[in-house]
Image 1: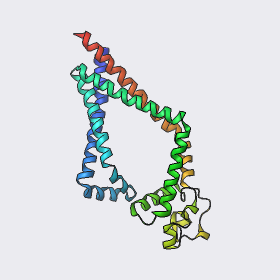
Image 2: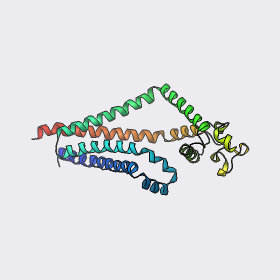
Image 3: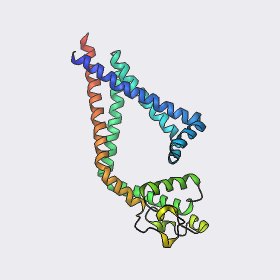
Image 4: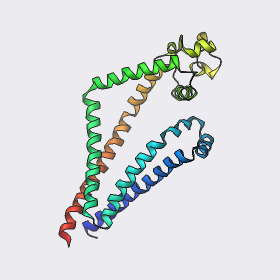
Length: 240
């Protein structure tokens, strides 16, 4: 088997997987938006804590369409030896790769941007805990799930709930802040529990290498796909 034929096969298989993944995501997104009732029943039966995923239908549709087009251009372009489709695939992958690199550079080089983001996130989180927790059902469920899964209380600590709508209404703190999720008074609060911001930072520090490895792996695949598509693009013009 020649190198040209091998790369055609690799491009077909690789982009075929992307193509099918795009179809699956697109189908899920359409299902969520068109038939949300049955989706809620299935998702709710599987895991009630994942009910908030109902709000990502449009994201699934957008990502699905992107992967569908990307996979189609790479797969069909390699099979039909279409220089136009291969070039479009190369450009699309290059744009995606540049966007990822630019995002990584911004995160690594401009720590002040991250500090500003964290500052705004903290303001939003504390405001939502004081004013909306216990009032808005969806937001309350999200915070409860976060605190239960990460074994944390509040954003900074349990005092984020002091003078909050929830405390003034129910005269207690959220159950995840106390042992055994019982009726939570201040004297019963598990003070060993850190705020969710601290637990999130610990999670990122522990899993940073995994995330970095995944990002590097994706970048390597994108580079390999660009090299393969450009090789086929150049070879098609000289193989006949």
